[in-house]
Length: 127
Length: 415
Image 1 (cartoon, rainbow over the protein chains, first blue to last red):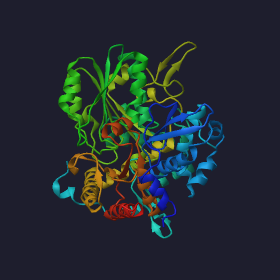
Image 2 (cartoon, each protein chain N blue to C red):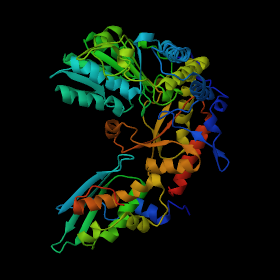
Image 3 (tube, one colour):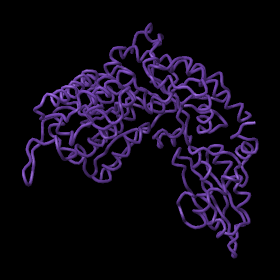
Image 4 (cartoon, rainbow over the protein chains, first blue to last red):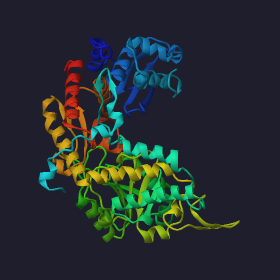
């Protein structure tokens, strides 16, 4: 089996979970991978207690960025906004479960960056 | 166009002239297919730069001592040969840092006095960001309008659309790529220039992808400005070229102010040096200029007709081999006579980044992304492409390895 393009990575790439749009939604964010111009956006529904009850990612990207968004989406639903704000780069890298080279790091982190943007308005890259 | 006999004969044996191509990873030699981004350098260029610093380094111009005169002769000698190589004149051949700076020089020094409110600057959807952003900035500063010519599905410009845009009578400048860095399209620049001039517009051609790989005569094209860069033409980074029409360059104010570009400096104002130095403020990239001179000597010795035939052959061979990979398609003109040595690819079901990653495992270097041409990507309806591009050191074997790597990518992705 390929060390990077593992079966579950390809599965999430080809059949991404929680992809599309949510109308209406409470919060949204859109960002780019500066490496290639790929676009990733997110729509969130957040309840009064600050819990993310539903979300959809949308956009195009490589297998790493799409799988990252898809895998993360399954964890992010049910989290509180303040928990999302506290997530760091390691969270999403560990979740992917593959070795990410420096050249692909931004592909892996884009989904968390977009998610944190929607929750906090912070447009910086996760560290 | 070269004669048909020459057009099918690739160059051979030049790989050994490029020491970096001896690089191996786990015993696998490198297949470098990214020359449209930057070309590799022959030993002659590397040695010329080394020799300049070991034996001839001094600041140029106004030096009384022998060493400074020697450095000046090397640098100005390179300028004269670069000018002749491009079909330009020595004193209207300006050294810049790169093509981007050459275009910005025109956008500032010419643009500020010649483009005003209500005027139009006309470019195309196939331009590199370097031939878009300087004009956006100029138009914002001057209250002018930036207009674009479209690109057809097979990657070509329409001369009818050009005529229609010119007929409005407001176009002050037409700026077009000679060869597209994404589609490979060779644009009919002499005809574009003729029509633009007939409508009273000034012209700039971005020759970054053309000068390195085909015979170019800037005098014959007759554009008012022609910009290109050294590092894609086997030369070092940090040196570019702007050829300009003498009357226009003489009428223009300077770009950057500083040393070398002045005739005399008073307390409140100064007078400008003669061409080309009026546009070369500060100490030039001397070693890089010398290196570029040797790079074009190397190309001239091969012969630009032969270089073009080689690029055409590799492009045609690549387009032919695309059929061997299911779901693979190329952008741009189908006819290899209409395109330079660059092929942008899409493989259905695999993002270009993943393609480039899997190619890299086979030690095949291709570029993935928007290639600094985001408006074109938008028009092509793709976020990015994978791109293979060639120079004199590439062979059919490099293309075969690319095709094999693309086949491997399909297997990895279980397609």
